Amino acid sequence: MKTVEIIVPCYNEEECVELFYSKIVEIFKKFLPQYAYKLFFVDDGSVDHTLAKIKMLAEAADDKRISYLSFSRNFGKESAIYVGLQQSTGELVVVMDADLQHPPELLPEMIRAIEEEGYDSCAARRTNRKGEPIVKSFFSKAFYYAINRVTALGLVPGSTDFRMMTRQMVNAILSLSERERFTKGIYAWVGFRTKWVPYENVSRIAGKSKWSLLGLFNYACSGIVAFSTTPLRMVIWMGVFIVLGAFCYAMYTAISVWRHPELSTGRATVVLLLLFLGGAIITILGVIGEYLARIYMEVKRRPIYIVKETNIKMEDNPREF
Image (cartoon, rainbow, N blue to C red):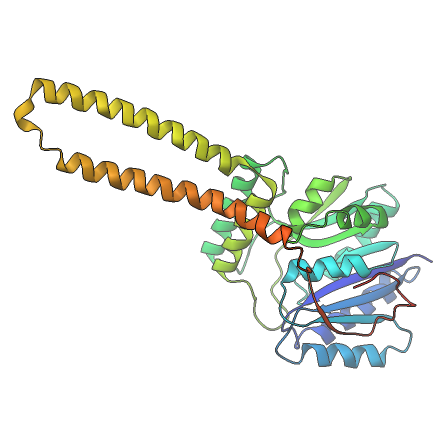
């Protein structure tokens, strides 16, 4: 009997974890009785009672079906996904959220895609963003357009973190050990055949989203910087443009002064050139600095996460934390 292991990153999801567990149990009993299943909750430094609720579920499940791990602080969803994949042992591994915005009803179709159709992974993508703010939807579409223009990843618009993978694909993802992780990009970079399952946007079962517009913007910038050097090339072309512009303006000024020397004061020209060049230099340094910051974070080799508490025993899972 194959085991499906479900990795569930959680941050302040005390209202959702029990509802999520009940739904998973229902799906496997009704539609997937031929498969064993395990749940691995990763508490991403929650400040509510999420960990307590997870512990209660783990104690009630006397068959060791529920494992959990809690970070010492909030390291982010990317770190939670990484440790979940790192500690997973199932033949099929699923990543999904605890708020039931990732419909568990799609699990049977995902299993069929891998087991019967020969895909290496099956991922869910939203066909709409019903119920979300218009501004958030706009920036989401803009992000996918931008990242697909500057990288060769070919990210699918509306793609989510809800995905089922074979053990081979999980091992490939874990071979990428960078500290600043962009999981959507890593999924695309490692390749493997992926089937996309469309679904309509689902509202959270409880609680509220932890993503702000600023957080999503930083996440988007992280993805572009992690998988593209296009911004650096744009800086080169910006420098070429400035040099050509300065040369053309110098020629224009020389001709104007030669024809009408009485009209030349030079003050506006100096101010405009200083503002233009100063802004261009700051922009260039900012782009270069972003890449240098990534190098700085990588060479320090800080751990991707720090474990505070877990019920995983080393004899059950030999992977080190």
